Length: 55
Image (cartoon, rainbow, N blue to C red; front, top):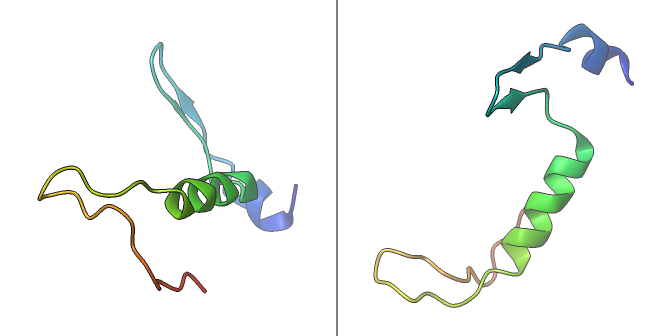
């Protein structure tokens, strides 16, 4: 655990919810999901975003 993570190690838990600081794996999972978005099925759904740079 890095110094920043240990400084902001705020956690809260209930029967249905667990809140914790973000981890590198959270971003990796989000990025994989973002890259694999399927085409839009509804006019309010943006679907795939082509040519979008995340860096």
